[in-house]
Image (tube, helix red, strand yellow):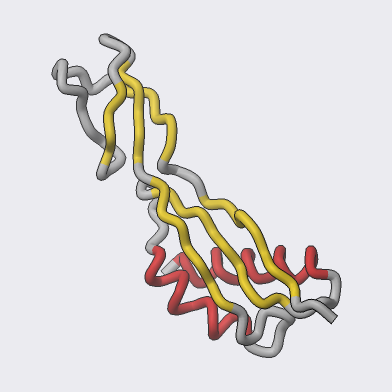
Length: 111
């Protein structure tokens, strides 16, 4: 499960940015086409965060839908998986959204 390694990296980045302050909430953006399972990230988060500035922090995950532009007709296509096709039949698609894996925000405890 590569989500464990991804979660470890997320926690390390947030801990570094928090600079010793307690983190109460982390918001991630995960694209539907990113090959990352949000439920697996949620499962790993509490375990990885234990003993760090994120211990007990809430985790919010915003799932970004897959979206592409058809290179033949210019139409926009919603994608549920990496490979798809346009209503015109073309499979020549430029992905516009859905591959994200971003730390969108973090909230810190106030003194």
